[in-house]
Length: 431
Image 1 (spheres, one colour):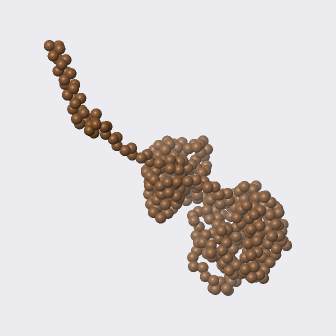
Image 2 (cartoon, rainbow, N blue to C red):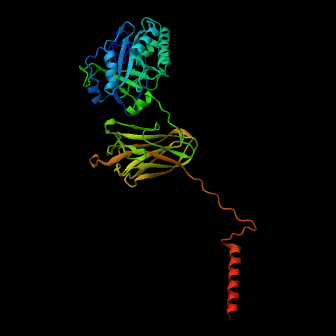
Image 3 (cartoon, rainbow, N blue to C red):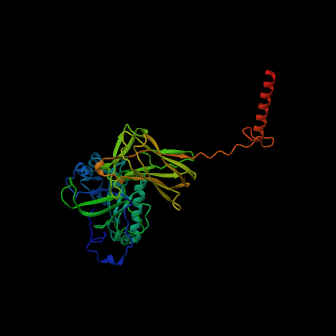
């Protein structure tokens, strides 16, 4: 985005004397790994999305217009080009609150057209008040959001700066919408406008440089998650609860997520449970880079056996430490279980665990297994099987008639005496 007025909109701007009047106590860091993206407009000419994608750009926002008066002349070129290059795309509109919000929304919808599967929700880019009061700005924004949401069936993303959101809207609560925060800083984590507590996207610089985009004044961003997380963000799929009888969570299931640099995650068909698996190289690093996590929710509390699938054709890691978190959010206990993935061609048990009803439980496996990278050990992320423990059968009740068993006690003594009697009679006949 580019700031078109003298109104202060972005944290980190040098010309922001009023910054001292608004405080933000906490930073909001990413939940884990992030992926890189950019946003482009007619300010960015000659963009080659394929080259940018080949150099790590996973997503891009493309400007549709500045209000109704300036449709972006490069949108029609950049919008299909991003998709063709494999870049996850989203459309944004620089919003003018004093203009008709429905007319602006309709312009975005007509230029963008119906969203394709895999497209990001539209973005409202709020950077100016147009002379309106805070209440009037909020009302105008809400009309745009409601109109776009009804037309697309998607929840629009809000682009906002740390201090601009407070100044423009009085810190209006729109936390039901994902936040794209703008803060230009070299810090590891941004400050975000209240009342949000988490960001989905962070525009951290407007002086970025990416191969495929001429110049060094590119708006660069990160997404709070992996590429798989971004696809889940775009098209949420429910993670099913495990029934009391148990179940299997395989790669590709909504309950299983892989993370870290996608370059080092290998998708393999023809091996593993369900004829597919994911693997990465094991490392001796202190911190994990790539990982898999199986998120667990249970219909009923109980003791369940946990097994993991290891395929001899692909698994060569001899130390794989699975972190099993059981017991729910309030009483969670994490147990580390290390196995040799080469020890069995198929299911290997991690043990029995007491799981609570509901979610907030998981199995996590990172690539920092302790094996050096030089070993080229392949760590496999595949299916997890959850099996309900069979209850211990109750003892067999004694037979009627005095409680004597046929396998011992008085009953056995009667049988022995009878045999002795028969043997004695037989000897007498032979005599």
